[in-house]
Length: 304
Length: 300
Image 1: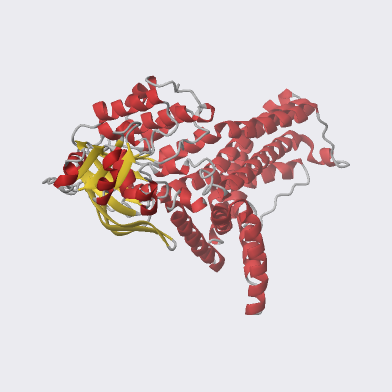
Image 2: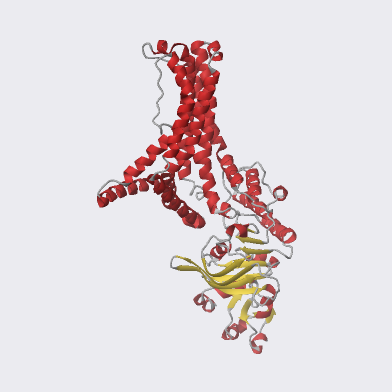
């Protein structure tokens, strides 16, 4: 019997209402803002973009909506993830879960997968769809509904698909880069409880300074900073690509070039995985995960 | 148990089993066997090691010595073991966020021998609804729900640590009846720990008694009658009884004839002639074997 699906189902049953709120409330607020808010352009900007304005507005709305939805869900998911190891100890239901024939490894790994990859991925997809909906309202309000129908849909579809796929592909890569930090945080919260994160911060900060002194050069803190930077670039910007347009034609040309840029950027993000920093990160992640499994084996006694 | 011969492999076999928490030995060099088809009571004072022993049986405590449950190493083969054994720990511990139906769904996905239909059938006998959220249930209702879920597992071994804590007397009786009438079929065994010894004494086939981590008794209820002798007697012969060094002397009721003494093995004939033989209750035997000696005879 494969426990992966029921373990994922558990996360859905436990968090579905919170996820629904997290999706619908910002969306409703955004809809209100777009329907009744004002947009201001820098002097001459709108004229410079010209007839490509509806397309640019659509792309910006989709991008902002997608990124916002992703950030909100991702931050929430990371907070939940750091508490995963200890979450069932508060009501002692860990004893119930441990009485079921499910191994410690899937019991820890599947919720992490759900919260760190699947939920943010769903948020990306939701953001893309909601972005188009908001864009329709935005374009209709400032340029008329006919302008929305007249959008270069083939190019827009390709651009938003490229954007979505680039972000979706980058998400597991970003998670890999951040895995050591997230797993250290999970372990700290498992061992120490609510003071785990402050203690971890203190240990890493002091430990970094002491290591720097001992080794004669900074190591730990730059490594952590490198992980964060690579995680961001894994989502976008690994290939140092840029997207600029000074007029309608340039805007449309840039739109058409977005899929190529996204692919190039993804290639750079994949290439960045082959680095000593990633190798060290994977080792640290593996050790932290093994310690979490060992901690979970002790059941409710571990948290006493 | 010890003294019971059987050719079938036992469901549980422990040899020199110990469990440490730091420097403290919560279970200390315990050896016993549980064959199939037995209802075994695990008795002991608070802190005697009952819960630790049960946790070791399901792979949640790291034991020393030899322990095989259903032929498996509980620590290394925990998942395989739990496919054929079910366990209720000592507190009502269902996840508070879940609805009862959610738990049925999840257990159906995680446990190959769980029957959702059987669970719903057992729940219909309780006051718990499928759409009830665990956090809205009283403690007793949570226990009822948990028992119904676990009883819907087609397991060979059921390990119950104070399963009826929080249940009213009617619910407790209903649970014991379900256990004996519907679950125990001569092939499955139950290991149950409880402080309500009098209530389950009639259900048990065997008993294990723990005292400060050590196994002080491992015996079938049939052999209790053979090995232990309880004599009820008048207060007038109390001194002669005491001189025979019984395990325990206690009052059975008001009045001049309201005293009794328990002996391990047959007492001398002249002592037997002083009283009337009766069956020692599990509670009295438990007190006799686990009460601290300085609290014993000097109380009379």
